[in-house]
Image (cartoon, rainbow, N blue to C red):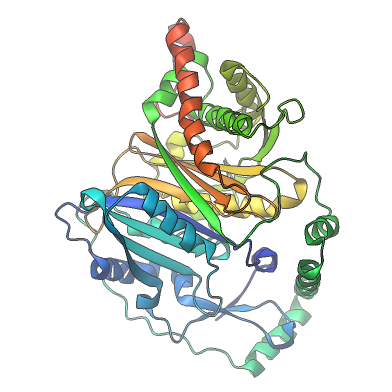
Length: 480
């Protein structure tokens, strides 16, 4: 039987606009080696694995008159070749050319008349490498019934699992009469559904009016009762175009800093982000006296005994951190960030990085998608940017026998938020993916340079400071 969209999913659709599409993306770079990976092999791989994520073959069908929430129904015209696409860079393509292509692709909203996802195989990278760019709408990945497609495409060995291609036959799409009858039945059995539907229709109407108004942003903020935050260069109206930058760093460096100053690797990563934002703001001649902190929404994994999210027994909850961009000392910044995160790590619900990264079948893409959903849900509480940090496995993963060497998240931008940062640790490296509005932040490349400089600044404190006593430095190997 067809399933109706949940109220939160409907709210995400209502919040979406051409300037703020609500899809997540991931850029993965592969070394094909002797695997022979090509477009047809990727199509076959997804065809074999898509049965594990049935929602990726469904589309949204509205109820006539908006009497109830739309339905998920099988797409009778589902065409895998439409969703799995082929692209190329002029050989030999470099990372800068790849990120320009990624920026153009993630700027485009997904077609709501089809299943809400796309995958691009990008050929032509230098060294014979290939890139896989996958983007999927936030409502596809709820962590309960549907995980991200990337989670089922990757294997832990070069020999792909042998799976049988399913003989999928789409169920018949319900008629308008059946949709109306279902809406009436739901209204009788569950009146709360009617209230959610009315609220979503009102929100859509207000958004349409606000979009045409001269002061749409302030109008919508007032209607949404959004908490104000200090003005900053990264909170401003969005255009319909994006920029994307990627940075790769060494995980061992973060562990050295952690062993010297205490805390966790996650603390060091957020302190690095803080230092990078500070350096970037100073290059823009921003006054650090008036902007001492940037409020970041950092989704954190927690245990929930009643919810089997992503089949891991965990879910993602919001955590707000004041990033001290006005602080001069990198060590003080690190300790301030550690103190802010300590409250979360001391709760019984906190999930360690080793548990997350060591779970069989774990893929960071799912948790990045859940983090983006949490950020969108917490928009009214007011913050400057979201920073989603997901620990990945510290061993290589493969797609159709090709080894994944790099993985960069490309988080979506929320309305009025011109910057979002995603972080994934994988196989000995820490990968940053930064999404920015093309018009609001034309100098986001400088922020990428400031990331490596901020990390170097912390490394310098390690070489000049005596090491802490051994008992203090002892901690779990993969503790974040």
